[in-house]
Image (cartoon, rainbow, N blue to C red; front, side, top):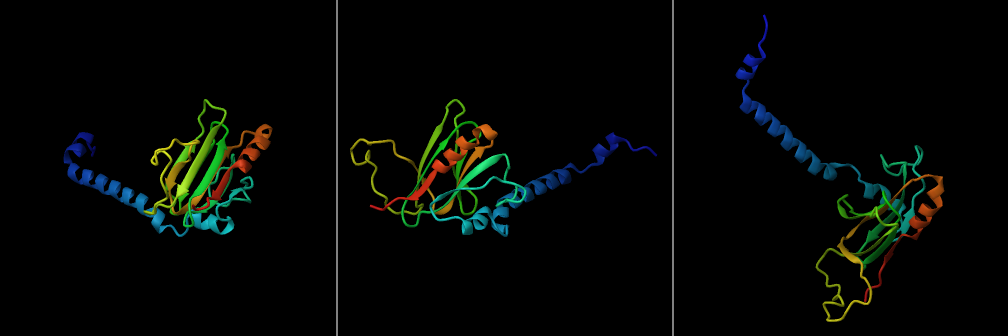
Length: 195
């Protein structure tokens, strides 16, 4: 007995098929949004105990024996800073040297608060961020709001309570290793004094 594809298409309950596809889609969306809260440990919990507060640390090259986090790419170098803005703003500065370089500010739960990618047409991209507490504290007026002109370019304010800053530098081979290491060491993350 031969089964006709046309007969199968006519006898299929398309409402049930559509309902099944919608149910699977909703389940997928729920799983994606709840996974960070259900995970036993996140990147912040794994890295924070080994990182000083408000200080940039250049991590050693990623190898099979040295992986602070799973799935870190061995073709890149990383500088990391654990920050807390409870005692005032934190200044973050870095120089991104070209394509593949990026600086990202993550909250404790892994949400990306700010990402800066190196501009391919430039030799370097300068990142200047001021991480400020994300509550309703008054942090003072900007010079422009007080009726004065700004003396210099101010850092972009980013609201965050605590988290990790990651500077990623692609590994372009031994010829660039010293240059990349120097740029990663130049990146800074420091507590600003409250006025």
